[in-house]
Image 1: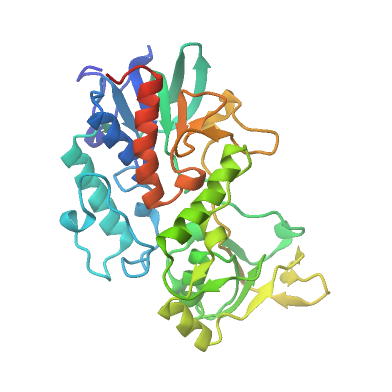
Image 2: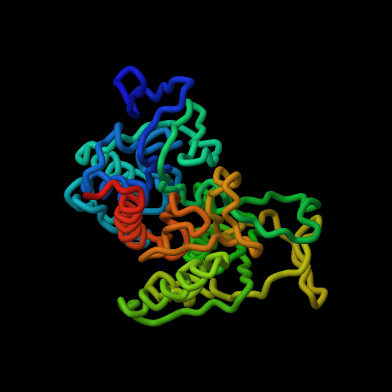
Length: 374
C-alpha cells in the first residue's frame, strides 16, 4: 500500500477502486484487535503492506470511548495491559478518572508506540469469499486479503429481548448503551432488567435518585471473595466448549456469577437488591407478571447485554443451524467453516485478558496457516 493510497487516523483512508491486496486484514481496534495486530507485527508481518487494521470509531479506544461518564477506573472491571506496554505507564490511573478517557488515551499511546497501521474511521460493510482471497468491502474502498482477524466486539449490537406488548409501552425504553447519568432518571419509576455487572452498577446509581425495581431472568448468584485463577479458567472452559461444538456462546459472567464487593454489600444494606422474577408482558403503562400482578413504570432500562457484531460476515455462511459458529484452534479463535478467518473477542476470548491471549494465538495460527511464518 503506497502513501498516496492510505492515510492513518488523522486523515482517514482513501482506497482505489481496485481492491488493495494485503495478507491479513484486522477488523476492529479494541483490545482484541490491537493485541492481534501487535503479534502479527512481532511475528514478522510488515505493517500496511502485510496487514492493516480497520476501525470504524472516530478515535482510538474501541467501545470504551462511548461508556457512561460515571464509569471510572475504580468501578470498572480490571483493565488488563496490552502486550508490550503497561496501562499504568501510559495514562493517569487515579481511581476516579473516567474509563472513557483513560482507556482511549492508553489505546492511542499504544497504537503510536507500537507503530500499528490503524485506519479510521473505516466501516466494514461485508466480507465475501473470492476464491483464494477474501474481499473486505468498506465505506472507504475495498481490500483483498488472504486472511481476516475479526475483532469487532459487541458494542454495536445491543440485545433487547422481545416481549409481548413492548411496542405499546408509553414510557421510555433504553439500553445500557444509551445510559449517560443517573440524573436523567431522577424522580421516576424505573424498571431495571438484567443480572450482569452493568445492571448492578446502574441499579446502584439510579436507585439513589429514583424509585427502582430490579428484575432478572435467573436468581442472581453472588460469590464471596475473589475469583481464583482456577475459577476463571473453569468458566472460560465452559464457554469454549460451547463454541467448539458450534453453540452460541454464553458470557463468562453467566458462568462465574457476581463477586460480592463492598459496593454490592452496601446496596444490599440499602434494600436495593430485592430482585423480582422476569415479567411476562409489557403493558402501556408498565409490565405484568405471569401471576397477573402489574406495576407501572416511567422507564425500562434494558441491561440485557450485547451480541457479537458479525453481520458483515453473513455472506460467508459461517453459522450453524442453532445460530452459533463452530470454532477450533488452540484458544478456539479459528472458524471451522473457513480457516482463513479468526474471531477474537468472541466466546471465550470476550474479556480483556482473554482477548490478549487470543490475539496472540490467532496471529500465530493464521500466519502459520497462510505459510507466512519462517
